[in-house]
Image 1 (cartoon, rainbow, N blue to C red):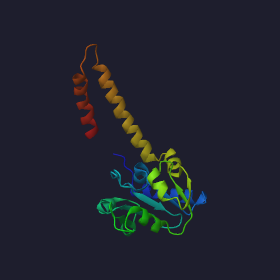
Image 2 (tube, rainbow, N blue to C red):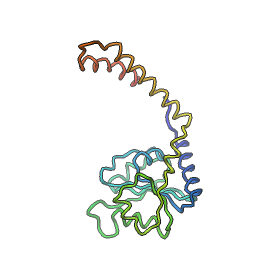
Image 3 (tube, rainbow, N blue to C red):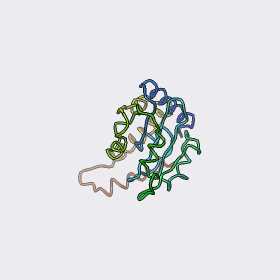
Image 4 (tube, rainbow, N blue to C red):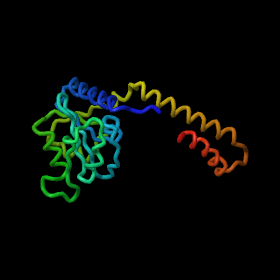
Length: 192
C-alpha cells in the first residue's frame, strides 16, 4: 500500500523553507490542520486550541501545541522532539498561554507570513507584527509526488468499484438499506 514516507515529509518542509525565503519572509506560521499534517504527518483534533508550526528558512522548524498534546505530537516526522513546545490551556497563568508563547517563538522578527486560512483570533494576537497572507503550503500541494499519485489512483479505483456496485444493485423501488448492504463488499475490499 502506498504511503507518504518520512523523507517525503522532510522534502515538503524543505520546499516550504525555500518558498519562505523566496517570499522574503523571516518566518512562516502554519496553523491549518491539513497543512500541519501535510508537512509533518502528525494529525490532531484542535477544537478551540490552536496548533502552530513555525518555519524559518535556515532553522529547524518548531511546533507549539497545547501541553495536553505534547506526547501525541512526537509522531511528527519532521520535527525534532526538542522542538515541540507547549502552552498552557485556558485559563493559563501569565505568560504561559498560546499568545505569549507564540510571540516568544516569533521573537523580534517583524516580517512574517501566514496562511490564508488563519483564524481571526490568531490574527488579532499578531497585530504588532507586519504579516503577509501567503498561500505557500497551498502552492506546494498543487504538485503531487509519485506516492500521492499512487494513493489518488487507488482511491479512485475504490470509488469506481463502489459506484459500479451501487449502480448494478439499484432498481426502481430499491431501499437505502439495500444500497447500504452493497457497500459491505466495497468496505472489505478496501480493508484487505
